[in-house]
Amino acid sequence: MRRSTKIATATLALVGLFALAGCTTDPSVAPPEETGDAAPPASSNEWFDQALFDTQDAQRDVVPEGPEDEPYLQHIDAEMVDTSDYASEGAKKACFANASISNPWRQTGWITMNEQLKALQDEGVISEMETRDAQDSDDTQIADIDYFIAEGACDVFIISPNSTAAMTPAVERACETGKPVIVFDRGVNTDCPVTFIHPIGGFAWGIDTAEFLIENLEEGDKVVGLRILPGVDVLEQRWAAAEKLFEEAGIDAVDYFTGADPAEIKGIISDELATGDVKGIWMDAGDGAVAAIEAFEDAGVDYPVMTGEDEMSFLRKWKETGLTGLAPVYSNFQWRTPLLAAKAIFAGEEIPKEWVLPQSPITAGELDEYLAANDGMPDGHYAKFGGENLPGFPEVWQQRQIP
Image (cartoon, rainbow, N blue to C red):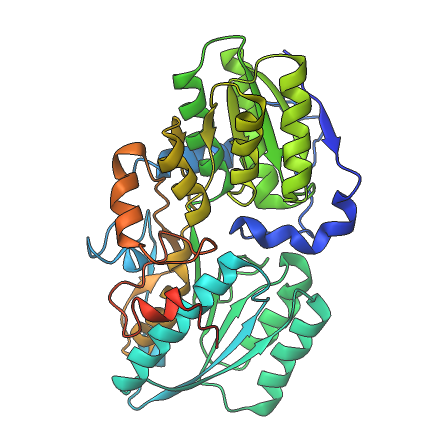
């Protein structure tokens, strides 16, 4: 068993691409520290966390509570909290401090969120949502949150943090206003928000994908892992889980950082194919999946067993080629949930303190269903966006109408 991590020359210049995966990335989060008294690690990967691995592994099999046809309102293993102190009548102003809309995953979610906003405005729940976009800057988002606090006109704060540690004090200041605070996508190091909304997590992604590849390969087969960037918590957790399972199964796994550059991806796969058979491809994001598949076509060899993502470009290429595939997801429909949580809070209803949303991969048996449901959507669209019952469906997403 060997493992090598090779950072492409262009990667470090592409740090701004960290969110291309449809991921909840936080470069400020350090890997867990080891102590002299700690038990031997279950994996040599410094990002591996056995307790979190076990929690997310178990949550994959939990049947979520909530409406069957509304996954954005479902929750897993929830501790419910009382919000009756916030109950009041009349339309409320929401203030949204957003990390960015700098990649297709966030753009898809932003479109969905705005369509949900329109529906709640029609219901008389939300009067307006003032939004400030931090453009992937901690300093800008801190200033945005402080601006909302100083403005004094927010009935609810919604925050999708750019990073965890840097944003924690600003979130705490928002909590000190006495107005409800909702955090989603990426977390912060405080429990002062009324709720923290997110899918299961990176270890669940890694388990889903590694188990699929192991089930469809044989001991000793080579898998090439294509990764976007180093040092990003959710992405690192995806690989840490997968690497552990590959090692246990005797899969020969080698990984590369690509910056999601299609040319770099093609070059890596071509080089690997020149030295021997590649039986599997593992990705921590679907972006660039088509380039990886094309490298096999260019070499005239059999398609690999492959995991990508629920981005439409991968789903369409998967269908076209007939390869053995799986599309893990980082549930994009979570962008609806914060506004629906605000609605519940002002109605004084109980909601989850940590709102863990379902995160189920798209399997081969579901592929045609999701292709049909998203017919006409652009390649950068995410199949599990959860906006099918909103007013602008499907045109707003087909035309990529980004507010």
